[in-house]
Length: 202
Image (cartoon, rainbow, N blue to C red; front, side, top):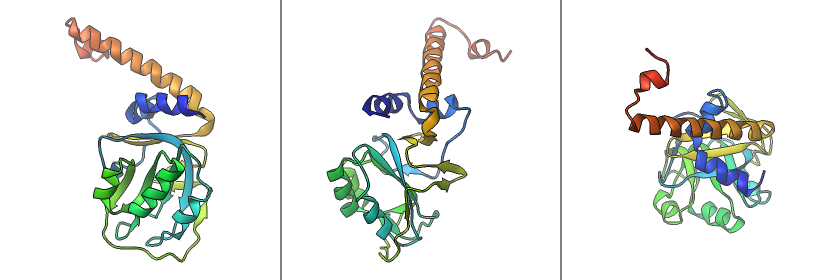
């Protein structure tokens, strides 16, 4: 995958990509962007961390590359912000595309000012320990979706979707076809067509 793939995926959007791959890969509606005006698209680097501990996130930044999306499985724990302003500054220095957290973040106001895409299930002012190495680069399962390092991650105001690495090209082609079809429908609606007819619902 390259920047052209990431740009195309971001333009198509999470919802269209989710539909295009058979309504698969969507994470829970609970995972929201701290700043709804920001989106992300990039290669997943997965991290499994003990709830309430973020040592593994610091270690993961040693392996992360520009354009990566850090996908953090903190077991859905919402009572400690595993990601904050210091990690954001470090991530931007590397060129990370963003972060998706099955858990909580904090320092939201500063992260928004820095214009860095962070998607999380909650905000928590509570801090973390830094004791556990976690697991970096192995598959994680978040909200029933299996995510591997190297998969495509797309997130926007609608939500977050994961696309398996080996089906990215096929999925984006299907998403573009869907986008073109819906654009044609919108044109037809402008000329008086009814949605029940376009969708065959009569």
